[in-house]
Length: 257
Image (cartoon, rainbow, N blue to C red; front, side):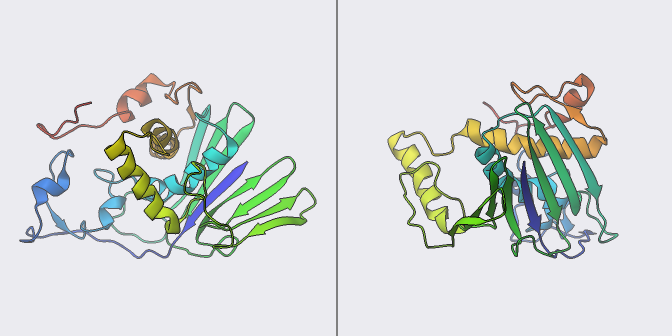
């Protein structure tokens, strides 16, 4: 089992009718989403909490840690997804949960649990975000960045790495994550464009990790536990699949693949 978490102390958000600021191209900002009137408070950040454009904390931050959890467990698509939570901290204009758990069960007797507390930043293992792997032979704690500690089954510490104590190998496709490695990720992406190289994280890999928390949001919005196809992650309930698997696009902005 892998547990991933994210904490913050976000404040209440309210959205008010207002004229579009002169500096903002509201048409371009909305992109492919169906058009809605501008409201003060959406830009630059709090649109994340409105379902029309955003996906809540689950995809704002959850994708990063869940990606590491999926990679570490060696899993792809789940067989079951459940989620509970809500907007607990404030009575405001948030639509997405500020408190949420997403549970994902995989066919290999493995699972991922993601915990979000957007409005209570009491930390886990002293970190505002991270991943813990609970294994059959021990535990690995990754409290964000490139730090990690390995414990055996008796909770004895057998290895520890603190940020900066391990030399990062830029040619290693499974090198540690963390903000300090953003420059390497950007360089890898640009090299892939310029030289036709395969990126460290190709689109299919990114899709698998992103889908997990998307399914969690669908489970939360429907209030149902989702049974999914472990071959591709598709929701087996056709009614839910049809309602949430895609979105409506503004005419003329439909993506072409």
